[in-house]
Each structure stands twice: as structure tokens, then as C-alpha cells.
Image (tube, rainbow, N blue to C red):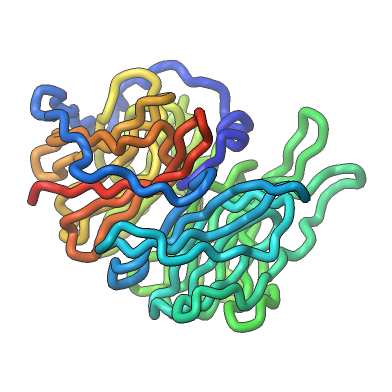
Length: 371
């Protein structure tokens, strides 16, 4: 789940190192099996500040959210990159001013690209690389004098008919309410419904392959299981959270939908959750003590899990072999601040988006994998 530097500052305070859970098996990461593996190709410059990204369904295009500025203020764009030639095909200007763009998602049929920015989502036609619509989120109920929460995450139903937006809770001075999931009709942008989430920050939304179930990660508060066959969706249950934990910073489902991977906030742990029972069956240990893990990405064959360890100025992509329970590779993305991670459909390449600090320059990095 992607978060900006501002969002990180608004997150939970740094947690102490988590103890090994008594009732769940911890899978240790064998640091000795990992080997340095720098990116084999230089990052492609895509604009001033690159944030979230998504790949087209065939992997031939990458779409990257870009935040820039001109004399009139902040600008929002999407860079479209040909992944074969590693070149920018075009840069699409979005009808947003002074709005921060962050997340990008591509429809399952590959025809639409959705970009989260400010209090709205903008729709691009993937064939023409043009913005065709902007859908504002409905007003968030809140006490007088409070501000609406930020839109933090975006996902699509499996049939592409609905857009799901994760919205943080409303805020006031030193106060914040709980967030919600907003559902919009993809064809019109009309609000279909909202679902309250028992977390101030709504970090990620993941759909099971059958399209009937979705999970929402929050901080603090953990995971929420939704039945998305209902209109609006309904809460099935909140996945029990071990004592002492402060929520989830990102989630991903295995290709078969049977396993949910959930990053434990401010720790080196990822919970492995059985979606049939919504119970934690084990932990994957990526680091001891504090760690800022981001963007869990399972391989297409389900055998590996890729995670960004977002250490300040020196992020790495960790390759975790799920069969052996070890980190088998550590990849340098050659970017100082990583904001997105995606894998090509053939499983042979990872792509990372992000930016360097001085000067502020956005990049897309290609990370070949050993298979």
C-alpha cells in the first residue's frame, strides 16, 4: 500500500520490537541466504516526483503518478512508459490543480487507468492516453469544523464495474475519526455506497479472485473482511489482531486467494492469514525490531513474496522464498525513495517507481529476477 511522506508522518508512532507470538509460528528469515543484486538496468527518468505505479495487463506499459509544479501551483500527471524500450511514451496532464496524486490501478480488461488524487479519482483511456473523466468522492460526514480525510487507496472490483476508494477518517486539531471505503460506479462515478472501517487510516484494499470478498488494511485497527456481493458491501468480520500490534501497513493476496499477506505496522513481520478462516497461521520475519516494509507483491506462481524495505535513502527490494522461509535475494532499485512495486505478468521482472531527493527526480527502475 502506497503512502506519501506526509502520510507516514500521520501514521502511528514508532513501535518497539515485536515479540514472537506465542500462538503462531514465526518463520525466521535467514539473512545469510540473501545476496546483493543491483538492478541490471538504469532507472528511467519520468518526471519531477514519481509515486505509485501500475502495469498494463500485458506488462507492455507502466503508468506512474507524477507530482510537479508550475507558476500556477502544483500539477498532476501520469507518465506512460514502454517497458520494452524503457522510454516515456507520453505524459498525460490530469485536470487536478494543487492535488497530490498517489495511487494508480489498471482495469482488468486493460482499457482504463484510474489515478487517485486529492479528493477524486481520474479515469484515463488506455488506448488514447487521455483523461476522460474525474469522479469526486462523496462528502464525508463529520462534525462541524472538521476536515475530510484523505483518499489513500484505490482498487477495482473483479468485473471492473465498481471503484473502491479507501478514505481516512475526518480530522480536527489532534483528533481523528475512523475511515471508510467508498464505492463508486465505474461507468458514471455515482456513489453506490460506503462502508465504515474501524481504523483512522485505510491503507489498502485487495480482492479475492472470485470477486466476492475483499480485505481492507487499516492503522491502527488491523484488517476488515468485506462481502462485496452486497450493495453496499458489508463487514463480515474484523480479523483478530495480536496484542501489542498497531495495525496493517499493506496487504496482498496469493494468486489463488487462499492466503493473505499483511504487513505488521512498524515491524519486520508479515502475517500469513488463511482466508478460509481469517486466522493467522504463521509469520514471515523480514527483519528484527523496527522496519518500514511496503508493497507486498506475490509472484504469479505464488512461490515468492517481494517486499520493499523502505529504509530512508537506501531502500531495498527483498525476495522471500515461501517454501524455504528465507530471504533469497536483496535488490537495489537504484532509487532513493520507492513508492510503488509491480511485477510483469511473466514473473521475470519487477518494476519500482519512486524519486531521488536532490534534485527531486522521478524514476521507473527495471529489476530483472533470477528464475
